[in-house]
Length: 60
Image (cartoon, rainbow, N blue to C red; front, side, top):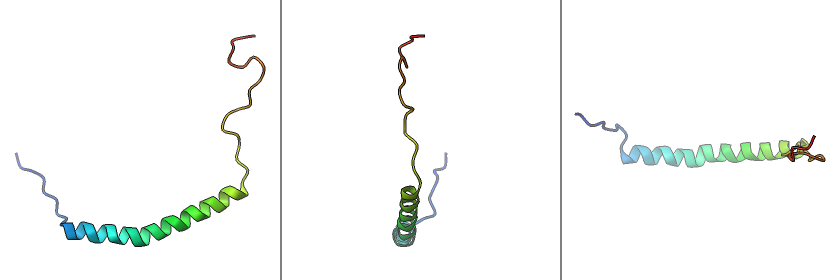
């Protein structure tokens, strides 16, 4: 059975990861900063609903 052979060399992979580390990394940081700024501007709902008397106890 023939084995699959990658057409990428180690140099190609190194060049691609190097480009990602500079260009995409900077874009990701800017995007994260923009999301953080937007999160500060919007009030977030509570993660869980407030507990009420009898909640989860099966009491009716």
